[in-house]
Image (tube, rainbow, N blue to C red; front, side, top):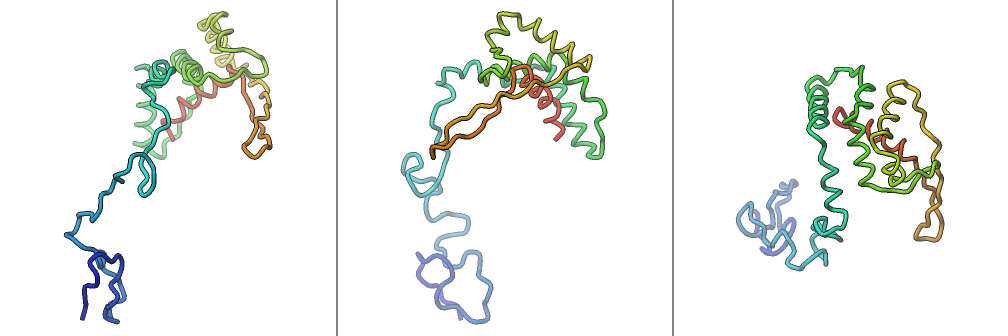
Length: 198
């Protein structure tokens, strides 16, 4: 014979028949099925105990870089069309092998969007000490044309990575490699082409 223990008790009631070794899904819970006996979201604001919900430290819409950052994350229509086509082919035919992707990496629209993504991340210069301001002064279109020519002619070679030691909370230092902006743009272009496939 089964008894319903304390309705506020969680888990298996104390007095249960020996033949019933498997617990019932709602055994020991009060109220109708599908209704929680307490609120799912904690009544206290923020993450001050009990449940965990998203607690953002800063507001993206109020950030100083929000306008530039939000605009740079949306790919242009041609890039989006390429990514959609690559994704559809990869998911539609899982056994398909992509043989010609390198020519997509040095497409002008891909490199421009890769540059804008790297620009939105900002970051320190690499071993060549070239900053985004230097590139803008030199001419972004001219710089991208030279990079495209190197990639198309297969003469592009990545440059060494600048090693910087950054402090850790425990007092030690952690090594960090900073690539040149040129290498970061090429890496981002490769990500834009490969990410939809995988």
